[in-house]
Image (cartoon, rainbow, N blue to C red; front, side, top):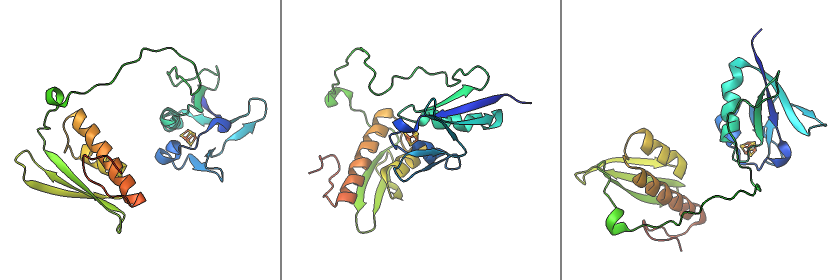
Amino acid sequence: MGKKYKVVYDRENCIGAKKCMGIHPKLWKKDSEDKAVLLGGKFDPKTRRFELVIEESRLNDYKESALICPAYVIDVVDAETGKSVLNINPTKPGDKVEVPVLRAHYDSRKEWKMDPKGFFTIKPYPDEQMIRVRYYGEDHALKLSIEGANAEEIYVTLVREKLVSTLEHAAYVGCELMKAEIAMKKNLPYVQDDPLP
Ligand code: SF4
């Protein structure tokens, strides 16, 4: 018999971020309060946790669900020893921990560098609920048009297609796409590089 593990889920502290069901919709679903349901899990009234014993073959999927959860309410433990197999030491919301504070700063004249891959222009289309992005190469010629319904699916596509090559550029495009998504959903004017009204 293979090794067994146990998924332990603290529903009371689930914040409904839906990341778990986003990556593993066959393992999790949302309930009427927008919290996650551990499919097949049983509630233990002593610990007030939902628990599910799993085979080793399913370990990775549950570990991924646990590691993507921003509230750290999912744990996966060795069924025999009860020890977590996640190999993390999470600081949970509400924990009081002293850490150094780094003051952010940016001098665009010294630090801005053009991405050798090129650049993008971004425009939301509220009537169609679509964001369109034009990709220009290093020669400033238009190469490709990308469209998507939200910021996340577009920036993941741009990274997957290797259309960005610096971390700063990827972060910039992510911010601009999110602004464009908010403008599209709230019917606000969007001007690239300007703050939203
Ligand atoms: S990712 Fe975590 S907080 Fe979000 S719904 Fe799933 S269990 Fe709840």
